[in-house]
Structure formats: C-alpha cells, structure tokens
Image 1 (spheres, rainbow, N blue to C red):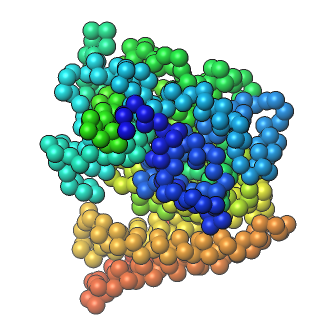
Image 2 (cartoon, helix red, strand yellow):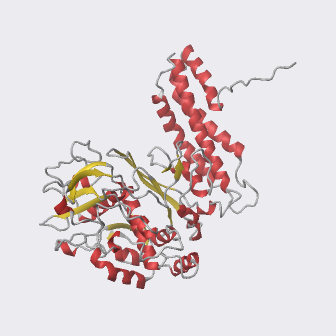
Image 3 (cartoon, rainbow, N blue to C red):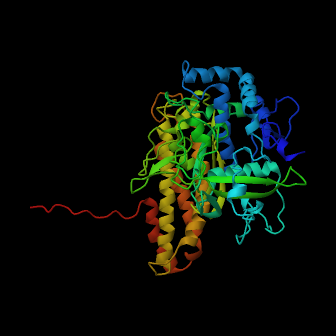
Length: 523
C-alpha cells in the first residue's frame, strides 16, 4: 500500500467496543467514517491510553458538531435540535458523507508531495536540521527515549520497534494535547532557529466526559452549545484552514467550540513512514508550533479552580485520587471548597441527553515539563440524574458525603503522623510511611462506602436529604478512619510509650484538641 493512500476516514485505526446488538461485521478497529456512521452500534472507544482517549474524544466532538450542524447556535433551539438527532438513534448519514467528501484530502496521514498530512506540518522536513528528528521512541509516550527510565517496556533508540500507523496517530494526538514544555528539536523559521516549546493545552489536567450506553450518546452528550456569535466559517479546525499558520506570528485564537477542541496545540509534528512498509512509522519530527505567544488555556471538560494567588487553573490529574472525590464538583453548579471549583461546562447540558449518563475521567499525571508519572482512567455509575438541575433536593447530599470522606481522610493522615512523632519522641519525624499505609487502607473503603450511600439517594424525593442520613454517614467514615488508624499503629502499642503515643494522637480523628479562646473576665 503506498504511503499516500493511508486515509484516516477509511483505514481501520480506532479500536472500539461494540454493543451486544450490533450487526455484523464487528471489526476491532474502524476508520473515522465508519465510526461516525455506526456510532449507535459502538458501545465505547477501546483506547488503552487515557490521554489518547481524551484527545480523540475532542476530535470526535468537533466532527459530531460539524456533521449534525450543532456547530452553530441556530436555526431554531440548539437543545431541541440535539434531542431531534438523539431520537433518530444515529448521526445523520448525509452530513457525514458530505463532510467526508469535502475534507477527505486533508485526512491523509502522509503526503509525499509536501501537502497537508493530517494534524502535521510538512514544512518541518526543511525547517528542522537534517537528522534532527525525535525518533519513534520519543513519539510513543509509553516508551523510554534517550536516557529516560523504562516505564512500560524496554527499548533502544538505535534499533526501535517501529509502531503501526494506528499507534502513531494516537501518539500524535497525545503530543498535541499533552506535550511538554521546554527544550525540543530546533526549528528554523525566517532565519531564526529556536528549540523551546510551550506545554500542550491539557498537560497535567484531568478531563471529565459524560458517557452513554453507546458512542452516539456519548458524542451528543459531549457537545456544548456554541455562542450565538459563532460562525462555522471562522471557527475552523486545523485541517479546515486554507493554509498552515505562520509559526513566527501569534497563534490564531479559537473563535468557537470546534477550534477550541482541535486547534490549541503548541507543538508541530511530522510522521515519517517506513519506505518498505507504509503501515509502519519510521521516524518523527517533534518541535514547537508558535514562537510568539501562546493560546489561552480553556476547555469545557476540566474542573477549573482558583489558586491562592487568584489564578485560574484546571484541577490536576492525580493517580492517587479516586473519582468520587470530584463528584460534587461535577454535579453541583457551585461546589463547596476554598479553591472555588467550577464544574466542567459540559455538565450544564449533558443530562439533557440522558439522566443515566456516567462520567469518565481521563488524564495524565505529569509535570509541566518532561516528567510523566501515571495515566488516570476512572468511571462512575450513572450519575447525571443527580445534577443540581435534576435533583435539587438531594444533590447537596453528594457534596456532604464527599466532604465527610475527605475530612476523615485528612484527620487520619494527621493522627498517624502525630502518633509516629510522639512515639519516636521527635516532633520533626517523618511519618510518611504510616501515612501512606493508612491512606491505602482508608481510601478504597471510603470509596466503597460513598458509592453504597450514593445508591441509596432518592433523586425523586421532595424531602431535602431524602435517602441520606448525615449522622450515619459521619459515623461510617469515622469508623473506617479508626479501623485504618488502629491497624497501622498496632505494631507499637505493645510498649508503654507506643500505647501512650497512639492513645494521645487518636484525638485527631475527632478533630483534635480545641484551642482555648480568651474569655472576657467577669467583674
């Protein structure tokens, strides 16, 4: 197969999971056109790497908006138009066919004529020094490259295993959305050579997506109404632009949902196919996309918070933090918390598609520059029926349960560290070992307790707090914290000093010793 014929609308590169009722054939991978046409038969994407899953969802949201006409506010009511499409059970075939026919030439993965390979910049072959490529081990984020430690597998830059085109495309997306800041391959533009990149728009962040029983439901639920001023002729995806952007100029600002979803990358890439097997990628250029300025960071699928300095930032991905601890920030319009969290905008509208939608959290725990720690992928049972709009009387109970679970988790951490410090008779002693063991025991049980009580909530009740007993929830989380505390500290209670330290620190589970307040002297 010639390299120039690999078209992402046609080639099977997206792994999917089919619904039980889906008609045959059910291939393990599909191209973009089949995915859109058969989204009602597909249960979900089956992408193993969460950042690639998150990135591809954003591409699919933009394509869904285009083929349905939901990329503009009108004509008519946007929400009603979406529900009309939902009733048909499929994305409009004529819309899909029309879009594919119009932009098929922009979805070739390679283009040997110096054209427009999809989400790539063919100019890099001339603007980067000869031989100054990144290599496929750098392209595939799960591989060790250079002097980096092995993560999932060992590898050699001198003799790398060449990735398939399907694997390379998903990694291309990860770089566009989660690429690091800092030094990269040098790129010379207009006689000036630089080698510094800005971090991708989703780097370090955790994104939250409504998830239905089919990919069709998931894609419709993931759309956010555009502003009334948005015009599709200006709100362009990168492959819809007539020309590549000027890397020496300020980056073009997103003007609507489609450009915000797909055109915020700070990196430029170019894949190099293997001459002997176009189904494999031999090399890759990876460098900066814009030298002047950066694209403002905004996204409808992130929880935004306010730092102590007053700066807005997305809640970071944390592989140690279970998804239930974020649930109130997804269901409540004004979640509690000193960081003033704002729920992802998509959840203002997702429940209109279905009250049985779940939430999928996808992200990459990483630092702003090169360090990557762990993928994050978590899901919930159906929760959209408990949004504040749908269940105003009972939704606050979700926030209260989360607060109780968090509170006793913090108290447990403080108690075991204090017990260790008193046992070792060293106020500066590091009790992290005990704290880590206590957390490993408490948080999984607290998660199970949360979901058990969540399932008992009555979202149709008219009594505030129906199905929720705050006192019982408080007792349950306290019991879990106490059990973890007793287990972790049991090894030192055989000595008098250890037993005394454990007994004295136990009070922290109940809030600690209250500070005395100055009283007004009596006359």
